[in-house]
Length: 64
Image (cartoon, rainbow, N blue to C red; front, top):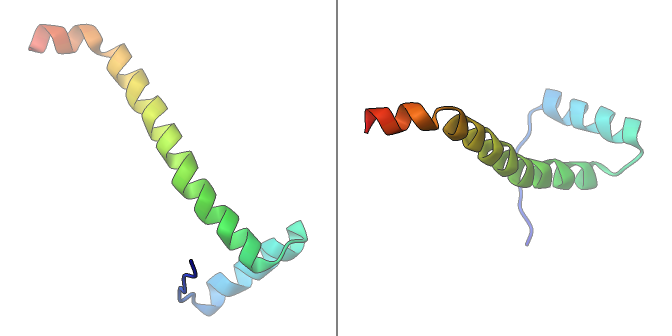
């Protein structure tokens, strides 16, 4: 699937600089960034939520 997004000049410049620094096409960098966002945040959120629930388990039991 193709997706088109609008970036301002600053964002395009930053994306080009980062891609050049990594030696990859800007399209590949953008694709990887989206992938990391979609995959990574879910894992981080799940882990953080688990830690909070485990840490406060006794408190939740007393409050219920």
